[in-house]
Image: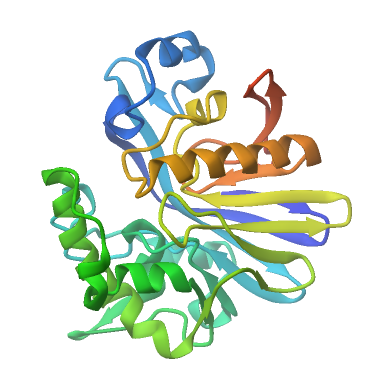
Length: 305
């Protein structure tokens, strides 16, 4: 378990799942082989497995204790889900709630759930299976969901979405209906559908960061002299820091995603914000600096217990 403080906010990482997911350039298709090989000394083994050329990552939740409240940033993949579009997580069974308990958090303790965007591995533990029904996992929480994503992924609005680019994207589109029904619909009666920006408390704000999905967002933390930005899926791999033009294969609007990535990294480098992606294994959070027109890793978050 990883835990550290930023000003008055305690940050804890709770990992649901970690391992190899897919070939590196399936995940980051624009990245050339040499960028992985040239940076093998620090990409391996946390972010890349050279012997298999596999992307290595994590599905995890960041727990923020701020102003006496418990805030979760993203809720992972969840148990018992039908996910034909991603067999690795189809009917997944993990002890995530036990891990959350070891971090000192029971479901009823959670005050706010932030979904940075509506993809299956960010909303899964919004709900749990109770008999044949999906019910909110965190019964006392307000769920903060970007309105743009709620509208985009609502199956009733499927006709508004662009034509899938290939068979893989078609499967993902079909699977997103299942995600919406089991992980979004059951919490809408306790959700705040925000747009334009949203203040969580004195230390935490939400800002739009579109591209990966229309409603993708970042969580900014500012407390004392410390700053961080929780970027969701704006970054899947550190190679996207080295060259922010590299999108993941999951970005709905690649041009917008690349522009957002550059803008967020520029601010992080200039304002000394710790960058906290959703899927980095190992330390999980990274300090960045400018490197000409690109960026470089200047350090990693402390606090591994």
